[in-house]
Length: 148
Image (cartoon, rainbow, N blue to C red):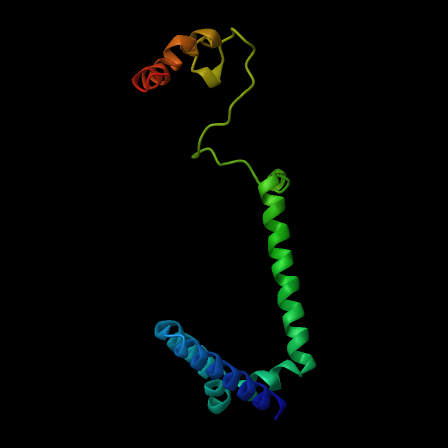
């Protein structure tokens, strides 16, 4: 009963605001306000308000929401643990059909992980960094174009 009264009052106030807005010749905004103000009365007439108010005052419903919250918290905790890598220690290594496991090889030595080849030099694999003049050539061209 109280919920229906509150919804009716909200709708009446909304329609009054819509009338004032229409008086100021803002018809599009007035129509939008009128549409929003009719929603509470429509919810009361369809019985949604009675269903929601009956659900809100039941303790079993709140216990259910609490259990859903605990379940969500547990899911998020396990995801956070997986992302940090703490859960990876329990995983078993791949079978022989999967990717081969890397073995520790001393620098410069050959081993089964490298297929009998010696380890390539780490410095030779890295490309040389570009000269600083190359990095700023585009910026210099733009500045010259604008006379700076």
